[in-house]
View 1 (spheres, rainbow, N blue to C red):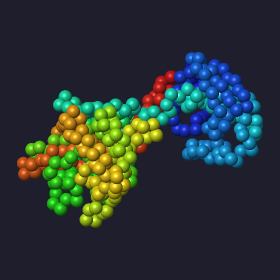
View 2 (view 1 turned 135 degrees about the vertical axis):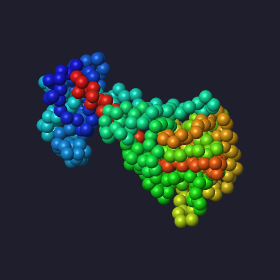
View 3 (view 1 turned 90 degrees about the vertical axis):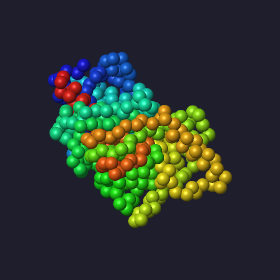
View 4 (view 1 turned 180 degrees about the vertical axis):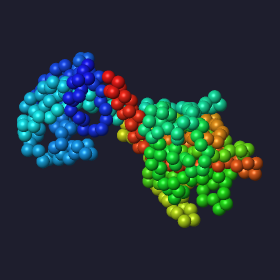
Length: 411
Ligand SMILES: [Fe+2]
């Protein structure tokens, strides 16, 4: 374990993060192109010389003001080869590069955290994805957020509320916060605790309530089938927030489904239909009075590993299918299999909004729906906004960074 005195002398890292030294470097050996470290816990890590050169934290490699890279590898005099590698007095790795005789130092905590030689899956999600089913017993992860707006931005109190909330959004695609204010417009201040709102043609915030001359079925009292919002956009929003200001109507119960669980059920039960929906491009169109959004995309999108990336489902926003003639019946048959699954009660999580509730969900994963409501018996007013998944990940990483900083300062 590195001592507190020695840690003062550790070099900075090529980022603004905190990297506690969980294991110290016990020994180092090198060839011109590979540096091998043995750690105090017995792990062995190998680093390529060019990787080390590019990731140095000195001011020929990064701009110290921004910690962004300024080095252009192609401008080096040659391939950066190691002349000498050693552990210095602070416990850092010090590498002398033969090409320019530069001696660059590397923080052991940072090196250990970026050990690509031993990484199982460097691109693993921040929080493991957990598929869920609905049914009568199912409830969303629910947290008391009553102190959120009173907390200082970046404070421990804010992180105490936000971190578990973001964890639920990242893992399950859904969280319900309770005890928030009911002032109209307060959603924007709440949302900004996570990140910037994504404005759309419906505004920065949008009001979900029955209104005259609606430009969306959402702004009526009719039932809405399970859907994701804005599938008509090339990049449809990764996150949606719905904040309940008033709810005194009969009906209008909210329904949420894990679109990934439904898609995986389709893959297991009807693999050909699943494959069809990952391939056929559907038309999504919102040809309203003054806007005309159209995009074509598969209904289910996978990453290169075959894992679910997003679902894009909204029957009321599908335009006319423009597929190869011989694909049309296959496409519709697959669509109907998916639609039948979406109606199965096992997937539906039902709940009623109470004033002060805020539901945050992954709009590229979850489907939301609502029952019809009777507008003459009271008022139902939700305010909503959109955001991107990137903001959730960034905010969650900042919570993790804060925890690391606290661990570091407590030593
Ligand atoms: Fe919606």
